Length: 450
Image 1 (tube, rainbow, N blue to C red):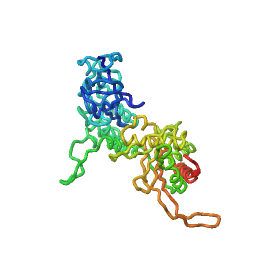
Image 2: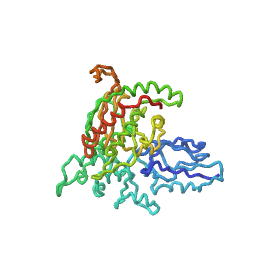
Image 3: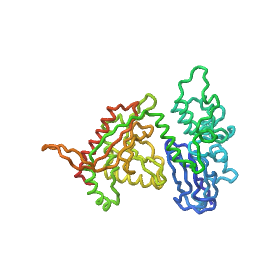
Image 4: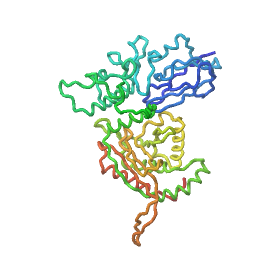
């Protein structure tokens, strides 16, 4: 019997580690080809990992809750076919096939937390050593990326108290420190910073919460995804200067066209026809007309994106939200967009998305109308500079101008709300972009077939 080394897969270009949230197979369990073996969580998305071989799960090398570097052996599978060989690892050596960190000390309580192992040893990998400071303190790639983006120096990092095991610095600790730093005036010479004074960031305090809790109140811990959403929203508000523009659009042509086409498409392709592909098509065309809406900011540098990748916010059954991305949306027709929208939305609700499918967005669409809201003020999805909200489509009496004079008519109308980053998008650019989206929607070709 040969032993196959199941390694932590590379789940995305920028992802260097993942947390094991659940083992779906235990030691001794039979595994068929493509059977899901475990569930992983990153700061992007949760994923099930299938087995590339058949056999018996011999040993799990990490526990649930452990955070592991990519390409690290996480389990051993005893294969049925001894000829399909992988190097066999003796049981006593298997636990050393980690990224130089002991299994027990690699455990993390939540996404984005760093691990704080003991002193570096000679058999630690270069990757692991590269994430340590001179003092030996370990920082996860996520913590380092946030620190670099926010201009937090190595000296500041060293001084920030950590709420993790053995004073390890978590993402929440760092975000709380950054938030506190932005609220106070620039440090004067000789002034002691909160980190230097030993003051613990709010997210790290173990004392009773400031909000009083009554006997009949229930305290509910956020799940992992809700924590990520909360942190991302706070980071966005702290990063971008939000302005929101509004416009009402006539949806009469699109509503009538969809009513005619939805039954045909369902019968011919087995696909449901929603309004989302139409919105994405209009957004993609408008982004092509106004490329300065398809940018990101890196300090004072503007990064104009070469591809138009439109994210669409999808509500999940547990009440959380995720944003899969339609890549190169401007290159796809309505049928292609419809199929991709349905596929991504369906797999999002069943926790089947791949990490790469929620990365690389350059602009985002969110639909307030699905929950009955006429409009809303969306929060920008960093590092983008714009997000378009669409509201509930309603019948309204409106004035129609004709050659014979003005008339009152009942039309299907909808409100658009565009939130943009005022650091780079002024009201003129934002208004022109939203006007162009509205023009594409109102001049929709209702004679086309999908």
